[in-house]
Each structure stands twice: as C-alpha cells, then as structure tokens.
Amino acid sequence: MGITAESREGRAFTGPSGSDAPVSRHTARISVVVLVVAYLSLALTFSLLTRAWEADDEVAHTQYIEYIVRHDSLPHISAANGIESHQPPLYYLLTATWQRILGIPAFTPDFVTVHSKNPYDTGHLVGLHNYTQAQHREAVYLHELRLLSIVLGLGTVLMTYAGAKVVGLREPLALSAGLFVALLPRELVVSSDVTNDALVIPLCSMALLFFLLAERARWTQRLARRRLWILGMGLALGAAVCTKFDGLPIAAVLLALAFVPSIRLRRRSSGPRSSDDHDGRTSRLSLDRRLLPDGFVALLGFFAVSGWWFIRNKQLYGQFLATRRSEDYLRALYFLHPVPWTSSMVFNELPSTLWLSMWYLQPNLVLPHWISAALSIGVLLTLAGGAAVMLVGGQWRLHRSQRLSAVGLLGCIVAGVVAVVIVIKSVGYGDARLAYVGLSAFAIVVTAATGRVVSRTPRLEPVGILMWPAALFALDMYVIAHFLVPLGGL
Image (tube, rainbow, N blue to C red; front, top):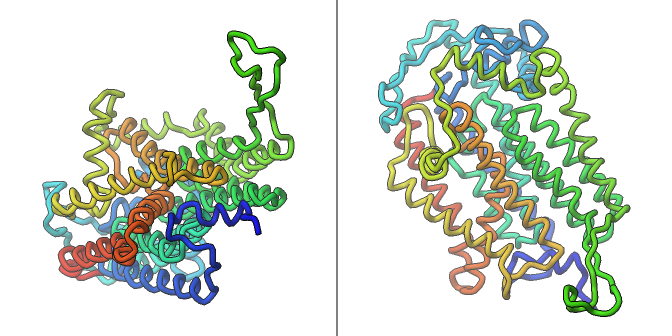
C-alpha cells in the first residue's frame, strides 16, 4: 500500500521515532483535560492574586469599556478618553457585553496605585489598597471582568495544541506545545487581566490554525474545504486587526501565503539547447485557476470584518489607521522617544525589550537576570533548531506538503517580532507581549525542535518532551511564591 500525502504530512515533524498509528480519541481527550486543568488552575491563581488595577494599563482598558457601557458608543481618540482610546474596539465591545451579562453597572476606576520609583525594581508593588466600600466593590467587578480574558486564553492553549497536531507532531509533543502556552507566566498575566491582548492573541492563533488546516486540505485535494478554512482565516485576521493593530504583521504574512499555492513555476522545452539554456528548457510563471480565488476569499473575509473600522478612521481622522491622531494625543500625555532605524534598534532596544519582558513582567516585578538569561538562551537554541528542522535539507528535510506550513509558522514568529519593533520605533519602548500574536507558532516550532533532538535518544525522550513544561511550571511556582502571594490579591 502506498503512502498518501496526508500520512507523509502527518509524520513530517516527528522524526525517526514517529508513528503513523492514529491516536485514540481517549488519548486526545486526556490531553485536552490536562491542558484545561493546568491552564485554568494557574490562570485563576494569577488573576486572583494580581491586585486590582496593578496590571499594565488595566485602569485605561477598563475606562474604555466603561465608556461603551455608559454611552453605548465608541470613544473618540483623545487624551480625555484615556490612553487606550486609540485602540480598535472589538475586545472592549465584547467585554462590555460580558459586563452587561453579569449585571455590573458602569463605574469609574478611581483607585491610584503608588509604584516604586525604580521601574525595574524587583521588589513588590507598594500600592495602597485601603479600599473604601465603593472601591472594594469596583475591585470585585474588575475580577469578574477578568474571567472573560481567562476563557479567551484557554482558546489560545487549545488552538496551539490543535495546530501542533495538524502539522504532524505526535500526541506527547502536541501536548507539550499546548503546555508551553498554558504554563508561560507572561501569557498567564496577559490572559488573566483586562487587556485587549487577551483577545488578539487567540484570534491570531485561530488564523494560524485555519491556515494550517487549509494547507492540509490542499495536499489531500479537498479544495472546497480549503476554501472554507481560508475564509475562516481571513475572518479571524480581520477580527484580530479590529482588536489590536499588532495583528497587522501576521495578517500580512498569512494573507500573502494564501496566494502562494496558486503561483506555479512551470518548465517547458524550448527546442535546441543554447549557451544561455543548458538543458534546453525554459521557466515561466503561471497561475492555478483552481486556487487563485482562495486568496481573494481570504481578503474578502478580512475586509468584511475590519473594513468598517478602517473607513471610520478615515472619515474621522483622515487616515485608515489614525496613526497621526494617536501619536499626537499620546505625545500630549507622555514624552515619547521614537527610536531611529539604526543598529541601536537591532542590537540594543529590541534584545533588551525581549530579554526583560518575554517570560514575566509586571509593574516593578522583574525576574532575576540569571533566570531570564537561562530561559532565553535555551529558547534561542531550540528555536534555531526548529528552523533547521523545517528549512534545512538532509534527513530532517520536510516533505514538500509541509514547506508552506513551515513558512507560515516561522513567518508568524517573525511577524510578532515585527510588531514589537514597530512599537519601539513609534514610541520608544516596547514589550515582548506584543510578539505573542505569534505565540502559538513559537510554541509549535520550539516543541518540534525538541522532538527532533530527543527522538534520536529514545531513553531521554520522555524527559526531553517534558523539558519546557517542567521549566515553565517551576517558573510559575517561583512567580507565585515570590511575587503574587506576598501581594495578597484583590
């Protein structure tokens, strides 16, 4: 019996020890239960122990929500409407709906936290939480609003697991990829607070998952199903951009890749050989008319969701992204230092931003440098190995049915870094959480690299597969014990 394209694809990332035997539904259900329990246990712990208003810009995000609840309309971009008023509205509309479901009345956050003078102090926050009765009630309201972010974060975990299975990672490795996201402390921070990052990350993960499913459908000749997945990808990307503009780089990558399969390089005989054509054949580009419409379907889905927001910005502020209006009002609030396109960006600003905030960061709560160094070096090595797994020849060479999927995964990682670079360039500082729009791709690539390495030493395979989940779980315990428990919550 021959090997089908789908079976070749299913073992493309698994290495010599991979198996083509189907995983039982029972095993998959156990993996899902493990992911749900692990994530919810930690996310709820992080949320309950992170005191009200002490997450990054949580007051400003809440102000945006309360404006919608109070006025049934979107705020205009201005300093009077808070520092997040330039953000696209989808997360705030969704959270305002959640607030109405809970029956929480509109309220005005008026609690101010006093921070340490040193922004990189590794000590604890020194906020004054001597609540009045009204402030205590509002703190409870905030913790209830955070529950929506927790549910959205669970979506990122499960879609990462699903994406890992689509590209052919074996069940233990797919579980490890999901656990990477579920146990990453900074992701737990983002998905347990009131912030629009909590929605843009799962939407980008969804778009990536749909892209990977579309690629699998293409190689198994299910073209009608591929078109549905591509449409879903466009809709998810449109929703992501309507949540936060950090989704734009990933939208550019995946929308461009939607057209790639329809472009073919054909070679044909051109008669007698010439000095310029040694094999007597010429190459020309052609279009596959069966696949070309899929790229336009993706664009249609993207603009069907996001087009109204671009048009509204153009009408109100003269630009589709309203960047000029946003920068003007932010300059009125902060003294911004945009970073020029120099070597400082590549060798100073970007590395220091990723180093400081990749693993865990809260206002005045920073990991010891040796922990960040060890984790960062480890992930750089495994990420480089993952890129080699996907792109380098030899015995690890991917089957051609997987190559565009690999480009999509690596492209999403790069797009996340580009999102960080754009913010640093615009306002002078950044945060690694902006790169989390590519978090699912990052987790899958790192896990694929780990799987390739440990597959060569079967005795070490269980240890290798659990390496990153174990390291991140230990980091979670450190953060909870040293930072969150002393704060006391609420």
